[in-house]
Length: 344
Image 1 (cartoon, rainbow, N blue to C red):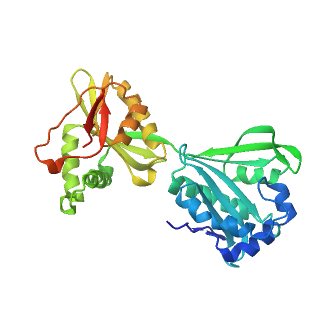
Image 2 (image 1 turned 180 degrees about the vertical axis):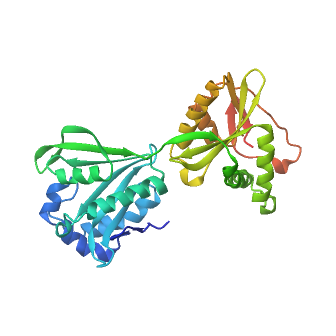
């Protein structure tokens, strides 16, 4: 897994290499840098830069963080550093940065911060990015404001800097999302059919099906026509962009069946599905639906977790299977109601 390069109008954010160590020591070793940041030591001693750079790849591969060099696109020089410390359990990233004093007041920090935050939301799947600054360094807070962060609080005398307790100002921002659902129209028919192709082939990959059995876009068009005859398709939009769909069926006694939910890959693990589900709940209540059902394959434990967190808390039906062909047997166990079964 390689660290990314992120390009902006004036900058290239790239992975550090050991050849950068001497310049890192020179820039970060300025007492003005250490004075305005929380974690940069002073004096910045020999080998510190090499040790810091040496940890970057491992931390990125573990999903714990991303650290990049801020370099000038034209002059190729190192300007500073920027990074995200990542909490995978909560999809949160902590933004940190420093800029060499020679390059202050040129907008480089704002440009780099905006770019890495966009990468964090779009490529890493973060839901929130936050940053803190010492209250005695309001210039850093200006950067946070310019990239769209909002002040969330001030932690009084929360840290100790060079023997003195200092206030820490806390900023944060959420991934911009404006989720709505609408019944599919003719203009979205082909786009939705292509999403069905991806959905169907996702299930085939789970089953290790040979590629000759994978679904084509042409077959998905026919699938979608059939779905439209039997139920309704509701497209999911984020900021006016189609990012998925619900396939719903309706029956007697005011009940509905959620046959399929699909979110495009770039928008997964961002909370869009749960927000869309809440919008679907509102629509079902508006339509007078009394209950909604969904079928889940036991091996899809992430789907169990997702739907349970979305309020599906009644166990309705369990389908069991007996294999006569031992080649169909599975190894993974799942416990349901005190009994052990093989996940299929």
